[in-house]
Image (cartoon, rainbow, N blue to C red; front, side, top):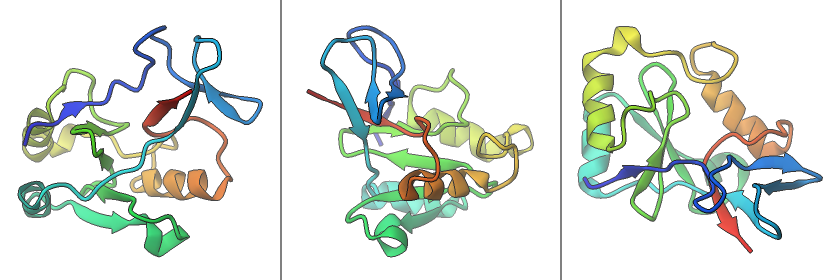
Length: 148
C-alpha cells in the first residue's frame, strides 16, 4: 500500500470547502468542489482490511451511484480509498498520513478509537453517509474534489 491521507482542504487557499448556495466552495474565486467517491482498493488492500475486520460497502447497491465504495470498520468508522492513491477517514487522528500507520494503530488501539460520525453513536458514520447521498444532510462530510 502506498496511500497518503487526503487533506480535505484546498491546496491553493488552504481552506476547507463549505456549502454555500448549493455549491461547495473554498476561498478561491470561481472554484467549486464535488464529492470524491471511493474505490474498493487493490486486492492486497482489500485482503488487509478484511483481515482487520473492515467490511466493504458498495454504495450503488444502496442508492444507485455507480462505482462508489467505502469501508466500515469494526467500530463503525468510515474509510474511503480514492482512485488517486489517497484515503480519508473523518475519525482518524490527524497525526496519521499514511494508511498503513492508521491501520496499524486502529488494529492495536481499538479501545481508544472514537465512534464514527458527528453524533457520537457507533455506526452513525454510515447514517451520515446515507443522509449525505439522499440530500438529507447539507454539510461537507467526506472528501471533496476540486472542479473549475
